[in-house]
Image (cartoon, rainbow, N blue to C red; front, side, top):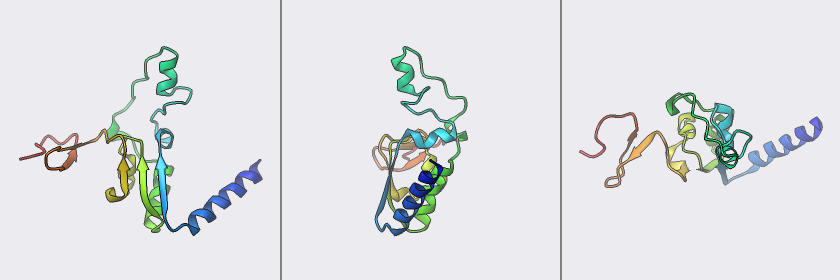
Length: 134
């Protein structure tokens, strides 16, 4: 089993190294290592709902959650020139916190820590108390 995992890991590394147009797609699972719940795991949001339970409240604020090794690995692929685009279903801002170029990121469900003016498109941090449009 360990040998199989090592072979698969080596194959993945070679595939990534040889790639020229790498696009990565992430979902809630990448952020569980950072302490955020997923949707379908044992304590996931949908799993709890299906059992008639309320979602567990977050134990800390969105701003205090940090990127994990998965986010950093994707950023490293960008620095190597391999990553051409990142598509994320996450709203946690961890890809941007890892250093990903915002122009290479599509956050399909938005971002819990950013606000964007619908008139001019300017983006500010949610904690920013300045008006978006002046």
